[in-house]
Length: 442
Image (cartoon, rainbow, N blue to C red; front, side):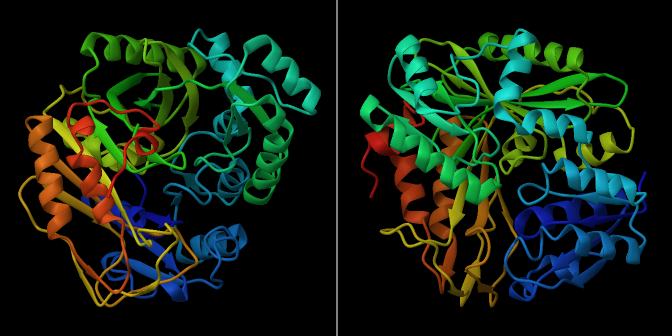
């Protein structure tokens, strides 16, 4: 096992990794920038080191600076969290070249899954179901040929990025060329990779993802699924485990099938396979994230497995955790600092920030009262996770927690989140990725 881990991230995930390191008896070191100097995990970690820069590219993605800190403090491993450098194969190779371990899969796996077109090809060749899609689109003519063969609507997607950035659904062929140019430009600015591809648009679909764990000896298991269908701008807002209203045999059959695929392909750490489920029950592979997910906490609540600790153990060469049965239901809401009308980030000093302390409720946050929310980073303030023996109980506990969460100094989306989970369609489980387009949430 490792003696000291450098956590190359910030916010809620940095704090979460600090906690896992403490539980495992591993030394932890965090880095921080001036805008994050009031973060609670700086005092919770074994060490905290100021790094230069404010923008992500200059600070938390500055590989030279991060590796210097890691070497100077004698870290023997680096944990990337999610976002930032977590799926950067070049960074992994630099970590290895510096004589340290990377908490995650091999760089080859990260590289294979980072290119969405190649990932689709690989999974299709391994027998994973995939909805119709194109290769990389190099001209409007190629796009029109795909549309001619597969019909409209289609969705334009960056092949080298994620997070919903650059995606555009096209219903009219006359808009195809413009959509491709817009998506490509946004992808180039966001990921330094302007390549795009097309997929058949699946209306009324649910976003179902499967938690996979693999060790270095080729053993693989799953920890069931999460439903992340309620999204805004293709980014998740509400996540649940298990998926409500879908037959357990259906979910577990696909999960077992994905385990077999991952075992055959030789994956070697924790990962998540994301799929779309059509209204007719057909599944199609979307992507595989080769890191811990933002929403990992809902799986932890219904399985009792500490996924961050498991990820560290797997990277260190230890075996898989024990298989567990599902226990109840868990639901998570992402609380953002944002203007509820314009949806733009809201910045300022947290005059009041008091997470609820309630039975069956867990709050993951990387900020505290008195801290200033800057414009430089993700606007996520907290993840509120509620557990119940029934879905209704979990939703009820989440609603009470959101209502009891006292935040002053910035605006938040809490009222929207409460509106979503109170909506009759949500309570009935009638959800899909366009839930917020179909229902007016006040």
